[in-house]
Length: 294
Image (cartoon, rainbow, N blue to C red; front, top):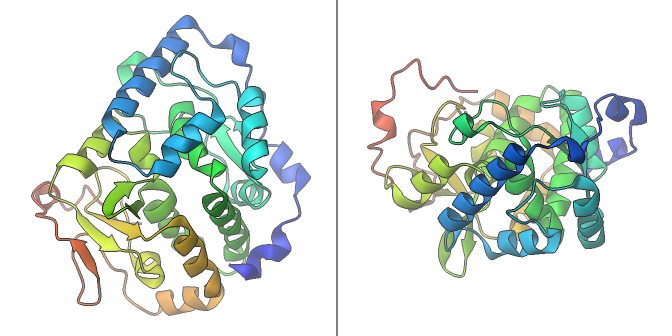
């Protein structure tokens, strides 16, 4: 990803236009109760099934079940660990400020929390997804370095029509990645960490395929956002992920991927290293209109 390093200087105006105050004191008793319900349910679900670095990150950040995190307090611990900080934003933001923030060790996080009626599903990421799902691993040096390089690569991708491919990398690593951990395959992606349904599906349902991460395969694989995944890609370690994603320049890869057909997560190719062949029972029932690939 080194071609993106020239974009690392903070575009102050672009980023500042997206920033808001968290206004932590405005959270209601119900908001804190919702956080507590989500937190305790996920901790119970994830134990034994996620990478050890994640739980270490929770401890480093000082996240607890009783209250919605206060970004100001949490950032003291995060800065001390890796130099990163969480920046409050109103919701989903445009690509350029998003990539700019990551390139400058700033993670954009929404401040609103879902209602009790939305515990199991929410279309737009809230503070539970953004903070509980993403931020603990930003205390890990190799993962934090990967996220910064991802931001730098994203800025370059905007100039080379490569954002679509970087979005796929985000989906299959940052959001829904798996990792080898002491002989087992465990989760680290924020979309799994923060989703009760997806976490149970990954850990208990035999349907999905577990494939070895390979960069070009991931960049060529379309994804869908409206149901549990058919395939998950597994890295060897965060150091290995960082190494594989900076040794190959991305811009030439975009042209390679544009000239090859899009692969789907529903089938295993001859070149895939299959770590677990899924039964497909869950996703084979999807109607064709349900999972339009991006």
